[in-house]
Length: 205
Image (cartoon, rainbow, N blue to C red; front, side):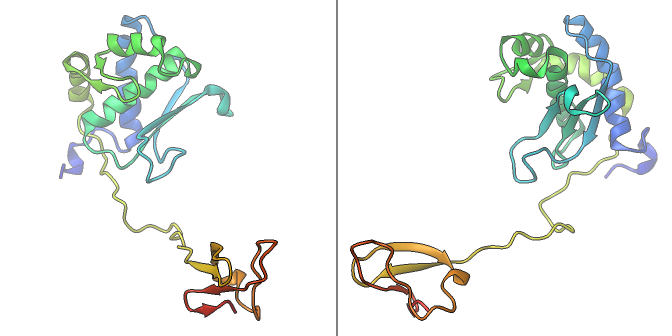
C-alpha cells in the first residue's frame, strides 16, 4: 500500500481534476476541446453498486450550476484504469452526450488512443503515450477500491414467495405469506373452477 506521504493530493477528486486539467491540451490536439465546466467525482453511478457501469457522464443541463458531472465507480482499481475510464467519460463531455457512442464519439476516442467496440473501448499504447506522463506528474491517487462488503445501507430484504395450487384444476401461482395469512381458505381465481388453493404446507390459511 502506498504511504500517504507519497500523495500529492489529499482527495481523490483533487487528483482526478489534476489529471483532467493536464488532459485538456490533448483534447484540443484532436479537435475536441473540453467544456470549461466539468466536475469529476468518485461515486456510484445511477445503476448502483452491482451494475457493470464503471463511469457515467451527466449533461450540463442536469446540473444546477451548469457543469458536466462525471462519476467514477469506487470499485475500480489501479490509477491507469481509473484514468482510462475518466478519459472515456470526458469524451462524452467533449462531443456532447447526445452523440452517444456513435461516429463522432468514436473519432475522438480513436484519436486519443482508444480501440475496440465503443460500447466498451479499451486503451491502446497510443493512449499510454500521452496519459502515462500525466500519471507520472500527478503521482499515485489517494484511493482504495471498495468491495461489496458491509456499509450503513439497509440490506435488501429477500421476499420468500409461497407456491399456491388449486386442488381441482391445478392453477399455480406464487404469493407472499401476508397475502394468504388470516384467511380460512382461498378460492381458485379461475372463473369456471370451484376449487380452493393450497400451499406446499397444506391448505392456505
